[in-house]
Length: 367
Image 1: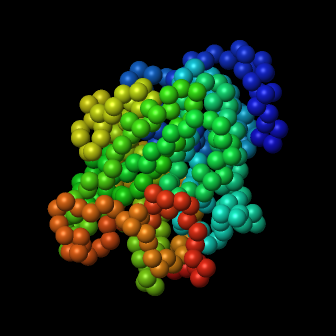
Image 2: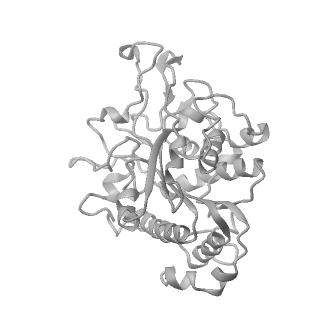
């Protein structure tokens, strides 16, 4: 990866002779929701994730899919070169060092978005960003429709801005719960920011428009809209729950379908918790996640969160902006809600700029 040269790759024999037969590639693919939707529609789709096949894709060698290693990055380059013109390239780098949890240890700020380089989680995150940046530029040069995903307030966007300068981009933020078939009150509130960059019509990404409309429901004696990703601990500080964070990191099947349809420049048939018209039941059952039971299909996402965060309980936050709160429910007075509808997710999920921890932020190692 250190010897990456875009001009050299584009001029290589591999680039000139590559069989461009792949329609969709997901890097950091997790449960492969976009690819599964593509396969269901007859497209050729390829997953790519370090944790996809333990003992194989997470070790150096021919089959490595760890994007911060030389062999993994080289394989990713070859995979991107094989995507057909106008094909879809989706990338979702691990967000744990770029967002809200553990922010007091990562120490990313506007003056230093690269963070504390002595911290191993920051080193890993920065390497993933560099791989993402280079593969984004390669995808653009190859005429692909490139879509990046991270939380709205992720520092990844700050680091990515210089590379995207001069390119046409379009971005949209959607809510996970708008695509989740889990019962109201059992869903996670997690905003995703998608950014499209391409020589094509990037505004197609605006077909993604799912926003939270979840009602407040009575659960365990309390009114709530969602399962909280970061409940308060005994000291009153927000503390990430690795099982929930891992589950929320997996795209619901209908979100994968909606992103695929956006690439096809079609309005989504999978918005606002309507029954999907094309997703197969088997795909839904393999990818669905909930607070009480994380499905087999989200194992990759859980492993990614477990390694990347191991989640260090996050810093104390004295005030949370309104943008971090879920929209009010139509089914009851907000004043009646006993439990907050949401809080910043694993990745600092408000719809605003990157999060900087308050000066008094401290780490809390309690559970």
